[in-house]
Length: 449
Ligand code: 4AD
Ligand code: MG
Image 1 (cartoon, protein in one colour):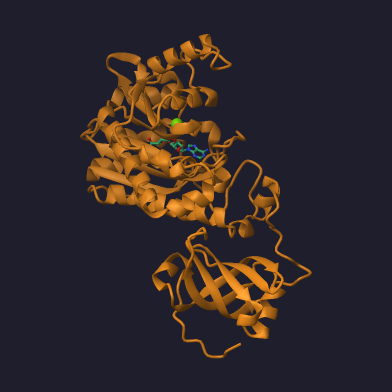
Image 2 (tube, rainbow, N blue to C red; image 1 turned 180 degrees about the vertical axis):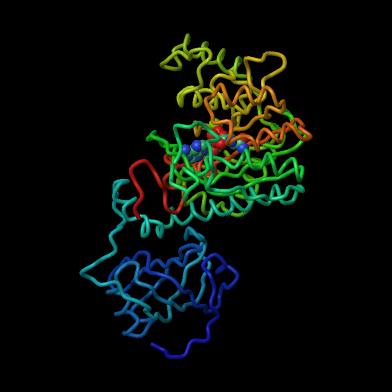
């Protein structure tokens, strides 16, 4: 093993700019195959993976022996010459010249995650290690791009980011889903379910605002779409009505998908395997179809009559997951379902002047049955109506005095929506369960690790 090493350090993602050169990669041993006097280690460094070729005759005996017995996930730096290879998944291979082990995993305590199938409970219990596998790393990279693109969309359209509090005195999205805690001598506080009420205040101060942060729901539901802690990005716009909001939502999602396609074609392949997710995502561009609740109900009635869905949809009820799946399957891009019955929606939603039993709201349903990724509405802007709504929903008026003030001092029509990052990641990456969309998922029965 040589002691001096002057090769430039590169990331695997950028290794293509070094074809024909000797470089050093700092990372971990992801996999190792041996075939007589040839070793095929696969290295990973967090940006990607690359296969190395180690013919016994071409390297020093120390290098060969070190690698041959090395346990998976040992940390190492590897030096080698980059070769373009069209058969390699990344397009390149590394002719290994030297290896320096940083920390060798002990043979009697091998890395617990192997290439064989593990159950989801085992994987979630080892989430801190599971995230090293190429598919999980790729998902986290796509997530980061989705978050960056989401913020960038609003930042470049003159929105001001305003951060709402996480500790709040009252509910926003229904009182049954609150995490409660004692707050000194002030009584109970709750972890925020949505920044919306607070950014309605900042919107009336600054015009166009958004918030982006963690959100909490003490959901008792154990579904593939629910986390108890998730990240939500929420725009709120003064003088915007429901139509303006739908235009904002479709442009927003189109921007996010465009950024993911620009950066993550290899990651999408790693994540979805044979499925050509990129081809599906290429169809996502504004305008998106708009379907009223009434028309969506009619679609479901017809589908039930034709035996295409199992359960009839009851007019007036919210849509269940199978209903949403059926509706979204009729389109190749997200569908915006608007004007739900006010009864199934939140207290703050503005009634439709043409039919006050309906709310001026929109749910954006992702394609392929990924369900609701965005929920939003025009807000009640009349003082008396809002006060009546707060009371009829059994909410404590004292906690909402400040919110009612917004309707006392220069009230205007205004609208906003919230998108859960994890739902968006699940759709874009084609994942069965939101638990894989966030580094450490918090669900009904998991808070470890
Ligand atoms: O539809 P929701 O409950 O709407 C609100 O919270 C509004 N106050 C937002 C607003 O208008 N500013 O939630 C918005 C989005 C959903 O469409 C979904 O993407 C996500 O937040 N979401 C969840 N994601 C993961 N786990 C959960 N338990 C979620 N609940 C909502
Ligand atoms: Mg909703």
